[in-house]
Length: 640
Image 1 (cartoon, one colour):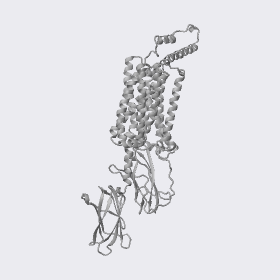
Image 2: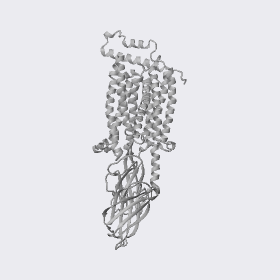
Image 3: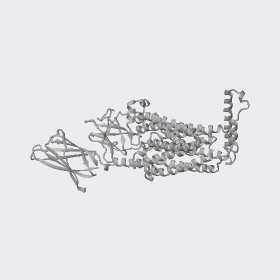
Image 4: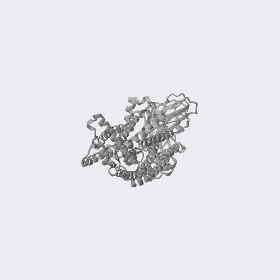
């Protein structure tokens, strides 16, 4: 079909239905494929190490189990569970203890004393700082591996039917935000007459309803999404209260409150503003609506920025306002594109000036998207290897490619916009003739009942609108623009879906850091519990024995020290005095004194023993068995 020939497709009335059906089918197909292939959302935080390590076999039962993560996490009761071979709890604490120091995020649970040999299972579940649930499990063995009856669910945190519904609500929330903000901006900036157009009103209102409904669903499902995975827990009041105490819960509640303000904005935009006829009054109201609507839109965008990737990681104070600007630019561009598509297909009155104004808005939005996108890409990817070797980087490449396609199609739209005129909508005498048809009195109006007169008036209005559509649809430039904008909207649907997936995918920078941290944590040089045994002889009566030392986790930072003294008969032995000192001779550090406290007969302990640097440390132990009998022994140990 020639681009300049009159459009000879389906009738004007059927074309909007066909276009809407096409877009609906495309949306369903894209979201279906993404949800089918995405699985549970990847998280910002990742497990980087544990003590004992996954698969480790330790000679003696550890006093606790610790887990290290790449980013800050939120934990609750039973976030870390240790199960013995029979499936019974081996840990003593419901809520893990925060053992984080400096930049290291670490949590641990204490274990029961006297644990028998066998294989133990550690199951953990938490919420990363960017709101996504994470979970996992590993095993270690005491003495020797054994059979275990522990059967853990294969469903990851954030998966299952609850996860699918939650992900659908997340996609819908972004879509509703784009239609609400972009549609409103299109009316205020590009086409003020659209405030009186019913299709435009429906578009914006549906965007508001979609965003509101999706936010409510996410708030109710937040507890089962991050916990049990059962729909019934959506109405657990205690669970809902715990959600409200979290950053994601506060963000969702804030969004609902802002949507209340957005409802008032919509009522004024399509009510008072649409009926205002005085040009100066309408200009003043436009300014007020633009300022108020901009504040509300920025606030809604901030509810994503304050609870997802932008709120954690490097330069969070810069990343959050950049993320808000990015979201607003996306809404102005893609939401305005959807509005233009509706206006071209469903309203006969939009003119070339409105289309050109949107072209300028779209160009400005692309500039903002480019600037903010480059910063976000650097922040979230960080390296060329992460760009090609991580899921986040691969999705980012797809997004950039889609933007390139969208810009190429937009170039054709700009060409059609340059050719567009208003003659197809309002030919010479057309509006006057239509007005006469609507206002000319019926020759027999005095003899026609009011009901019949109203019916005739409605019929004349329909006929006039149909004529306008027929004239409009015969314009080859307008037909070409409609097809081009429809192609843009199709690409934009895919782009929006990929963008939504990026928000729930672990950034490439942290994925690489987590992988590097996990490698370091599992390498032998990274250290582990230090176990030493040193015989001693003070020279006096009952002066012989053995000192056994355990230093956990045996790394730089805070450690727990346990010392046992056994007599020559192998029984626990008490002594009047016990002192230790640690020296790193290669760095001239120390001796660092440690005075343990007696815990039981023959057992001393000290917590918070600081190891400032990894290296080959000399551990001096002074044992006094009487007023005059004393000896100092030493042994070197690799720590950290």
